[in-house]
Image 1: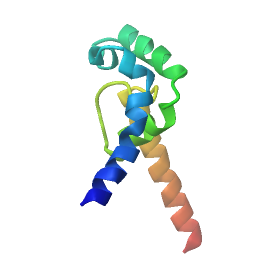
Image 2: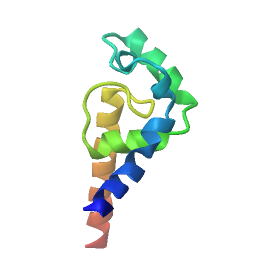
Image 3: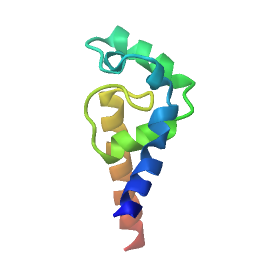
Image 4: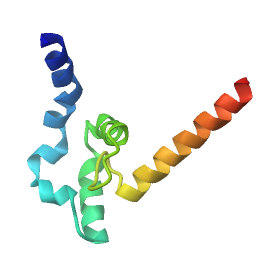
Length: 93
C-alpha cells in the first residue's frame, strides 16, 4: 500500500510546482473565452504544463484549462491520438 501512495505523490508532484498554485482555482475554470485566454497565459510558462496536460487527458477531465489547453483543445488532442493509433494498428495488420 505504501508503494501506491508514493507513486501517487510522484505522479501529482507537478501540481505543487505549477504556476496554478499561485492563483485561485476559479482562474482555471472560467466561464468565458477571455478567462480561458488568461488561464492559458499563466500556463504558457509553467514548468508543469506537459504533465498537467497528460493528467487531464488520461483522466478525461472535460472542464477547465489544464496544461494550457481548453476543453475543446483536449477533445481534439484525444481524437487525433485515437485516429493515429487506428492508422498505426491498421498498418501493422
